[in-house]
Amino acid sequence: MNVSIAITGSLAMPLAALAAVMLDRLLGEPRRFHPLVGFGNLAAAIEKRLNRRSIATGLLGWALAVLPWVALAFALRPLAPFVVDVALLYFALGAQSLGEHAEAVARPLAAGKLDEARQRVGWMVSRDTRQLDESGVAKAGMESVLENGNDAIFGALFWFALLGGPGALLFRLANTLDAMWGYRTERYNLYGRFAARFDDLLNWLPARLTALSYALLGRTGNALACWRTQAPGWDSPNAGPVMAAGAGSLGVQLGGAAIYHGQLEQRPPLGNGPAPVAGDLARAVVLIRRSLWLWLAAFFVLALLGTSLNGFIHA
Picture (cartoon, rainbow, N blue to C red):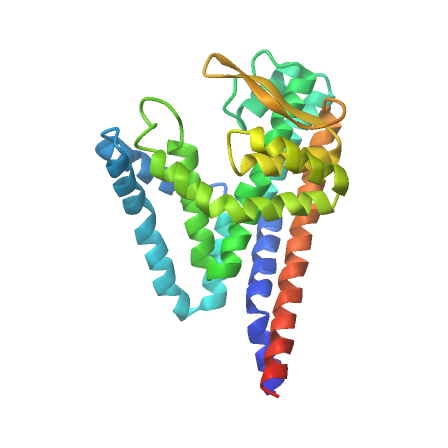
């Protein structure tokens, strides 16, 4: 009986992670009253009132937007740990939504409906998509899918493994504020500085574990070589490794020229091989889903190893 209780306790984290992933798979993101939509509205109201184009007011705005919810999550967790963990991780995950967005781009692109595909991918990326050709649309979609594999899935799982549901919540809220405020524009360059840097910090290790997962489940040697040689040239310290490894794993060429806010940017190449086509978006989604199952399997293995080690020490 004691052994059964101990094993159940040690498996609580991976079982909660599995339950949240299955909920996301079955239900997807809430269609109405998504908590992140409400959080985004709150963050926008805080920014409108506090933004004085300074790092200090950005830090204050970040703290007011994030910390009360994380504190509430830690306070509620002891009341029903498993339920709270599953609920918070479910709301933090976006695996099903990511696949749906990729399919919404790939379907019209494969059917030759380029204008519709441009519009759909424009919902996923911040670059100008109006003049993109087929490979440009596929490239934009794949870059977004690979990067968001970390932002919408693996980063949340990493912090969930360390801090439970509140950790997943902290990561997702911080990542949302980076997406809203982390721009190098006059309005956000100083105000959003803390949000951007803190998100970089939270993402540093998860991004590299995500890149390793992509590499292990595809063309491993090529992915590792692209990560090593191409990622350092990318602006983002975390997106670079993730996208370079993903592109190398899938054997496609990403990166290159893109238009942002009316300005042409020459970005370093990522990966090697032919330019991507519509079908490569589905391959990217498959790579992410296989990586997700790899992470869940690792959670269970580590939990069981921890139980075995604990039993050996106390034998």
